[in-house]
Length: 95
Image (tube, rainbow, N blue to C red; front, side, top):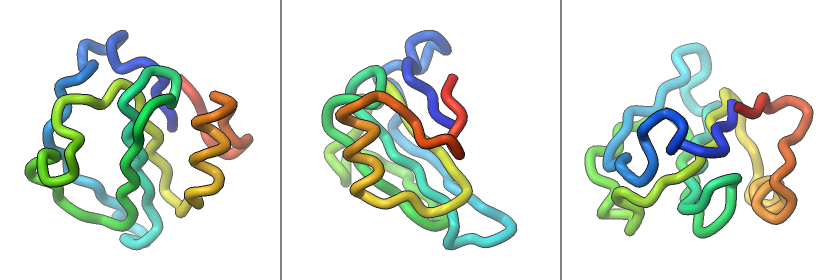
């Protein structure tokens, strides 16, 4: 799943922590946070099940405007392609 504009949900620039889980295969989950809408700007990648209690540790507190969350690993190269084109691979749904 990919959300191109968190402002539509009232969550633009307010995410400061999260819990990331794939209960079937814990290592096979990827969350990519982008500072800009439509998957632009700076990004941070989180892979594998984990709890992030404070995004300040990643210099990404309250700056997320779009994100990608999938139950598999996507490569940094794929993420950069998404960042430059705004297009998702066929196996990622976009909201």
